[in-house]
Amino acid sequence: MSGLTIIVPVKAAVPNVTAVRLDPVTHNLVREGVPLMLNPYDRNALEFALRLKDRYGGKVITLSMAPPSGKDFLESTIGMGADEAYLITDRAFAGADTLATSYTVARSIQRLFPNFDLIVFGEETTDSTTAHMPAQVASWLSLPFVYYAVDAEVKLEDRLIVVTRYLEDEGVYETYEYKMPIIISVYKNSNPPRDISLVRKVEAKLNGLVKVVDNNTLKLERECIGLRGSPTIVAKIEDAKPIERKKQIFKGDPKEAAKWLLDNLTKEGVIRP
Amino acid sequence: MSAAQAQQKICSEWNPVNKNEHKGIWVYVEYVNGVIKDGSLQLIGKARELASKINTDVTAIMLGSNLGDVVKEPIYYGADRVIYVDHPALAKYVPHIYANVIVQLANKYKPEIILFAATKRGRELAPYVANSLRTGITADCTELDVDPKTRDLDQVRPTYGGNILAHIRTPTRRPQLASVRPNVFPTPPRDTSRKGEIIAETIDSIPNINGQGLIEVRPVVKGEELPPVEKADIVVVAGRGVGSADGVKLLTELARLLGGTIGGTKKVVDAGWLPADRQVGQTGKTIRPTLYIGVGVSGAIQHVFGMKESKVIVAINSDPNAPIFQYADYGIVGDYRDVVKELIELLRNYKK
Image (cartoon, rainbow over the protein chains, first blue to last red):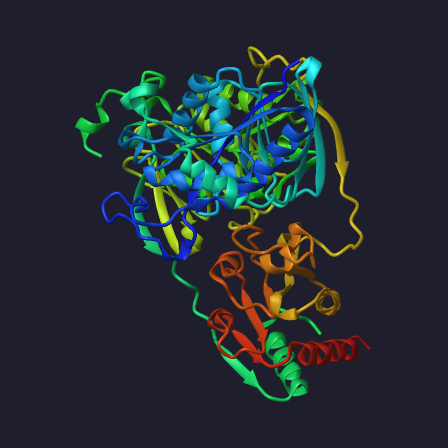
């Protein structure tokens, strides 16, 4: 009985979201020359996958659609414990929205690892925060999917997986049973990630362990990828306009401060003493 | 986009779209454990406004088993029509099964817009539905508008930390899908005299659910009874400046006396002083209370994103240069412990 083949797709996130540069014409994020890091929530996903591997055996493979500079953060995933890492990179993939990105990721997984058991995503990325990718990849692959997983148990002989997930806004845990393969996203406040071993990371770099795959290998149709495979356009961007505030400041005796505040709030009609 | 570009060859895995065939605005009405989500009702109100601009109507979609009279509710909140599917296989919510049913309905009726409340379940369903219809989707919108000429949905979402608003469109595909943050639009009044059309729809096939599905639901037992942050009129928010779990306790007392509730910034939740469902901000909840009181909150942009629409904003902080004061109507510079103790004292006296 073989162990699990678990794919963890990861993203190069922009570390400081408040200091980004946008292309003035396409309004897309300028990624060239911007240092990239592993999306923090993908580390929780990788931890989730590694724990399953620790319990049931098998291997964990990370994969990312990213510019060539994405090699470095994929080496970090090997440093954390991934067995293999793949960089999916080609100029033809540039300008993709979530539909085109999910297409590229889904078809890459299908071609490179047709016998996978699980695809494990982070809940969302810290820079674009859409949480689209897991469900979109599930749609391309016609597979069941479930978000916000905190734990899972596998019955290897039946290829069944029992996933427990947490719905933060309802305060509810739900447990689902599925026949594998399925797609999971991992609740971002669960599975605190293990450290990245610098030794393993350096070994990954020295030995060229990150494999690079381009569209000459994948042969994805031009109309389905990159800008052309993206139905959404960013029509306009603007600075968020703040609401005008009174900005009345009180400095001084706490007793007087408290009275000043309650008087004002009563006048505003927002409290009823 | 020019006509030439629109005529371009499309991905062979996409169906051709005739935009004129697609009419009407749909709202997916999330109904779980006997409750319709407020976020869905709020979207019915917004959909009405959009529909009047492009002279079309509003349809609510509901799924479940033994739904009974609840299918009339969307009409009371402003929908013109409800299409529902009542089937034993929908008794329990299973993401890919619910999503596939919505896809089948959309393929049959061809709406031009489908809106989802960006609840945890809504954020899970919407991208699968969009992708299966080979169309675009925008997550967590905070504003929607529609262009009466092109009938394009203008989907506005804060991005990259919330200081930029992106306007996103799906000009060549239909339907257009968006999820919308709960509580950015008001809930319309419930009017039981409203009439509308109710359609019981059957579907061709439910995906095989053999060995696939929900086997257990376990609510988290909550120790305290204060309402959730997104439901309260008054929210006291603890920032890292409160220093400890004891500080949060003091603020909880203040919240109780004000008849409000307690929330926290990401830092406070990460420190374990409050549970994650009380986090206010970009990666937590968006709130619009009548009164927000931030205590020891510095005012990081990611937090401000989740509270800046509050009616009245109060900040209490020992650092006079804390950015939060730029967003406040009333600010108190000082040690929060002293000020909050005085507030508690005064409020107790008022009660007597």
